[in-house]
Amino acid sequence: SGDQDGYLNAVLLNNGLIDEAIQFLQSPDYLLNIMIFVSLWSSMGIGFLAMLAGLLNVDKTLYEAALVDGIKNRFQEIVYITIPQMKPQMLFGAVMAIVGAFNAGYIGVALSGANPTPQYSGQLIINHIEDYGFIRYEMGYAAAISVVLLIAIAFLSAGAYALFGEKD
Image (cartoon, rainbow, N blue to C red; front, side, top):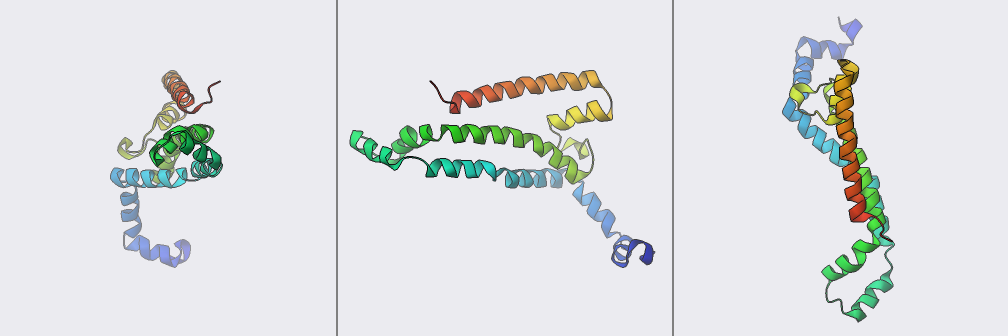
C-alpha cells in the first residue's frame, strides 16, 4: 500500500489522520471562520490601494485654505475636505467590495469541497443559484433567485452612487 499511495500517505491513512482532518475541515464552524478570514484577507488589496491613492492625492493647499476659512479641528477637515475629495475612490472601493462579496461564496465551496456547504454554513445567494440551477436543474427557482439578486445589486449600486458619486 505504501508504494501505491506513497509512504507518507500510507502512514496518515493507516492512522486515520486524513479522515479526521477531512471531518474537521468540513465542520460548519471551522468553515465559517475560515471563510471570514479568507474574505477579509482578500478584500484588502485593490480597495486599500484605491483609498491610499485617494488620501495621497488630496490637495494640501485645501487644508490651509480651510484653516483660513474657519475650520477648527481635524474632524472638520475630514468631513469637509478629505471625504469629498475621496468620493471617486470610495465609490470604486464600494463596487469592489460588492464584487468581492460574490467571491466569498466560491471560497466556501472551495474550502468545503461541496455545494451546498456543510449544514449551509457558508451558503450565499450565489451558491444557492448554482445549486438549484446547475446541480438540481430547477431553472425556474434559480431564475427567480437571480432576479432577486439583480434587484439587490441595483439597490446597492444606487446607494453606493448616492453616497459616493459625483453630483453635477
